[in-house]
Length: 281
Image (tube, rainbow, N blue to C red; front, side, top):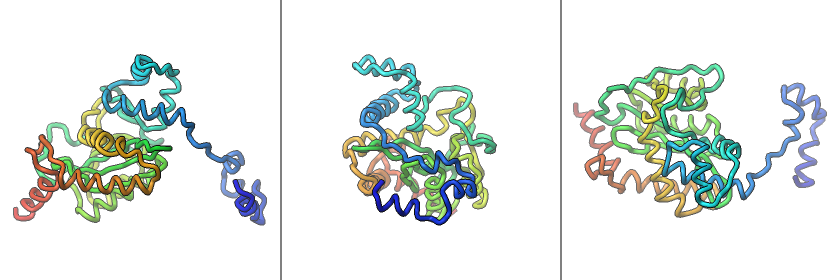
């Protein structure tokens, strides 16, 4: 901390101890200064991310074995710690897909045996770790399930709820309301703020069932495309560069990238054709 910042920080007329008491903040938190992630951890996180994209069903034990097979001997606890920091989890049937926040309501899964036949019938979302040249960010995207179109997205340097709500509000404002919105059981999506925004818009809330990692598989495939087709190739230096690059990529993804699952059509073509048909009907 510079001398000037230190003076500003201590210039308040109330002692810091009293300010902590009034705000119910621990004194240790007031004096804490976050340390940047070590370069060795950033390198390891990049390797873990690559393994997770190729082998998403691998947990910390098998990732450790995969790293060791390529000459990287790493303690499993360190891998677990970094995976938590990255927001990664192995995709395989288990009791829970992710951890909801304390006291957050879990909503039932509404998509079982439901044919997805039109745009704005079902939207889905998830969060992904995004490595950069130095450091990392988190990306949230909201996708129309029928067309695979990315409706909105945001990046953040923390796993908070605010950037998820910003992406949701943009999608609702620009594209109307879906019938169903599907998420996993992560704390960001089970929060009162996020579910409250959906309920206020009259959207039915669906959450992945226990052992149902495949429920959000289309968004998981999006992360693979984003990283291998853009992020890993660019090695963005700053958050500003990352946002500009992702803006270009998602424009390409929606308007020019053809999907075999969509009959070699683009997400934009499928989304807007379906939306027009719904309006005519």
